[in-house]
Amino acid sequence: MVDDNNYLKNKVLNMGKTSVYFQNLEEKQHLEDEPLRKKQCKSTHRQLLPAITPSMKIRLTDEFFNQESTALATSLLGKVLVRLIDNKELVCGRIVETEAYLGLIDKACHSSHKRSARTEPMFMKPGTIYVYSIYGMYHCFNISSGGEGAAVLLRAVEPLSGFELMQQIRSQAQKKTSRILPIHQLCNGPSKLCLSFGITKELNKMDMASPTTQMWIEDWRPQPEFTTITSTRIGLSKKAGEWIDAPLRFYVNDSKSVSIIDKSKRK
Image (cartoon, rainbow, N blue to C red; front, side):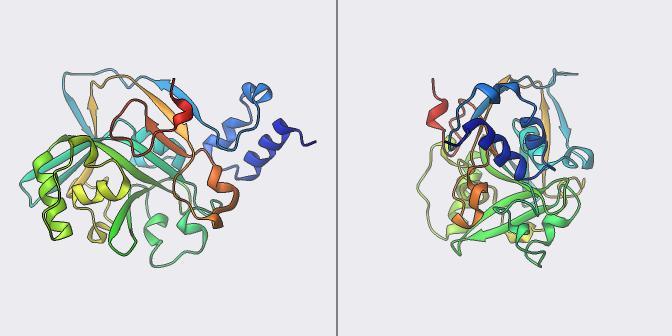
């Protein structure tokens, strides 16, 4: 009979030692007492930094994005994505769901296949936008992180302002009158996020840390406390092998804008 605990440890450690997540996992004592499950899910409670001054909004710079992908994926939760539309109107929303992709070692990551014209943004400086298309008509939005070919996929945003403009942008992108969605459904998925924020390949290779870009990320202070749920990534090809079950998706617990809730974490 296979020793479940040793199997889990060996599987995780063999998946790549460059990830902060996998480095720390070996040291967690609770693995000794935890049975093997196909999909590992954890929750961690974290408190955002207290406000220095009331209603402080800090635009994130190079230093923030230059983190290992799992660290960046969790750090992005609670931050605010802002997009300037036509140089006059803003849409913004709080990031509530991300996925980490570890680069060359990660078989689920685009850059693991080869460095190409398509994946070039993933090898550029941390904070570079990587947009790719799916199903020939939708887009997904990633931000490069520290580590060769590594990036973070933004999966969901909780809209804060510009709701009507988001609806308008969606209608224009789809070249038809889109049905009016509830606010929490405007960006509750990677493609819906791109539709509502007008994110297309035109933004590919844009530097999110540049002070002159049309889209950036801010840290709003103060912010409420929240619990981070860790689960497996979604919609991966079987070609990713054991990486399909890697616990590299992170989301804000109790947010209605999260794309898919892990039912095993519900109380």
